[in-house]
Length: 274
Ligand code: ZN
Image (cartoon, rainbow, N blue to C red; front, top):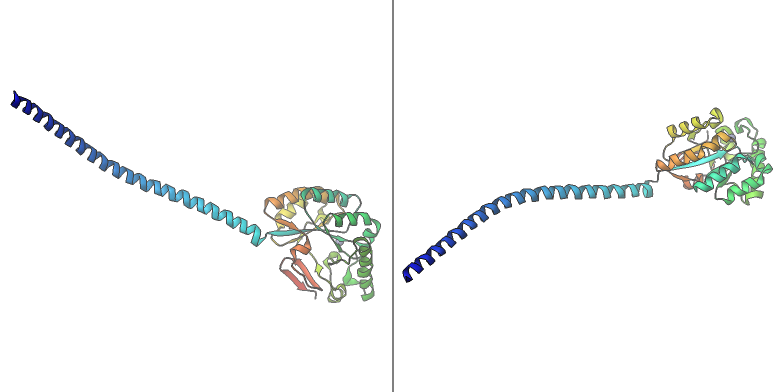
């Protein structure tokens, strides 16, 4: 009986061992597969991770670059308005500029500033630059020394009474300036690099198309705040420029310490009058 018991026990142990061995073999084989699979997975995963991280890295690099672009490269334009002030259209423009939080540069005619000093005062109070566009829009190249002197000094006196300082810049009518006029102006002379041609088209849609087709980084944009067609399209132009990543600054902010008697067309774009 005892031997039979041992035999049965032995068989059980043996079966158990086979079972265990079999299990182990299956486990090992499975494990190997598992290993291969997981290593494939790991490669896939690490590849995915790498791609994800590199994408993330790329994205954050792009972000930094974009931030840098705004901070360092500073895509910038200056809006300038000539021939005012006008009690209707300039006031309408000032309201838009205030709403959009944009400061611009006004080149005022002495004779108009004399008629509407309150408009000039408001424009200055709201953070805009007030500059000279001479007294009554004569072509300085056609005038005598005395006449040029009168165009400059008469406007200086009028503006000084209103804004309590001399105009820092002067824009000659038609952008026309000789060496003699430049000497008499004796301050930075500001022309423009992008002409809205509002004086020519007097059409809001065409003014908009002209700007979006010709604007570039560092440019000075020329408008006239005496035309309703110009003022009406300014909100659309400001929105477009912001969408394109431009910073809108005054001429004084755009040009870093411009020199007296030199003619400026845009940022880094100046020459001496010939
Ligand atoms: Zn003008």
